[in-house]
Amino acid sequence: MSTLALAMAAGLAAAAAGAEKAPQPSLMVCLDPDGRAAVIDGGRAAASRVFQRAGIRLVWRDSQRPCLEGYGIVVTVALGTPYDQHRGALAYALPYERTHIVLMYDRVLQAVTRSAVPSLLGYTLAHEIGHMLEGVTRHSDSGVMKARWDYRDYADMQLWRLRFAQDDIDMMLDNLSRNLRMAEGK
View 1 (spheres, rainbow, N blue to C red):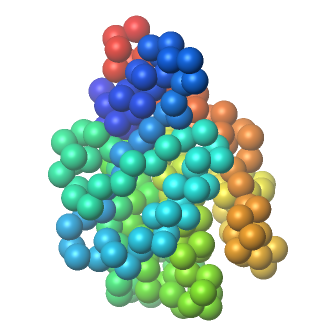
View 2 (view 1 turned 45 degrees about the vertical axis):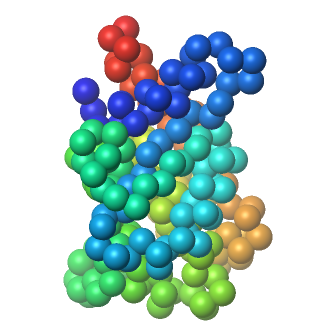
View 3 (view 1 turned 90 degrees about the vertical axis):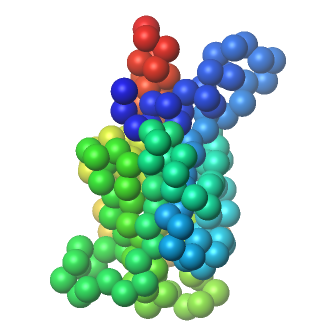
């Protein structure tokens, strides 16, 4: 079973149980225990907000243990990224490995003004988590999953107007449902 299957099963199982108002499917996201979790608190809140609009709830943990045991995604915060590592990127995901994201915090700090850091952190996390949920490295023509954000996208981030394209939402929710069915053995 994939690493994400168990993480998504809990949130989707409640929805499948037939509650009057089905809760949003959820995904556990863990931060590695290197003491850097606090530097991205604003980014966590922003990423949660972006996903909430897509119908998915992120559940954050300050320990990587639950995710390494097969229950979600682990985010590592890098403070000093070598220039030649993923040139131009703010983060990268390993969607085929299905567990890890590396957030290059030093590059996020260099990309925008201090007041814009929390929203850029959140959107960067949302983009990489999106890759993990979609299970592929594809990009969209617009929205959160766009390959390269431009000035307009950065402005939309500040106003909370940048969203996932509907195709991306559909793919993420389809994969969440598929993983739930696999976890249930159907």
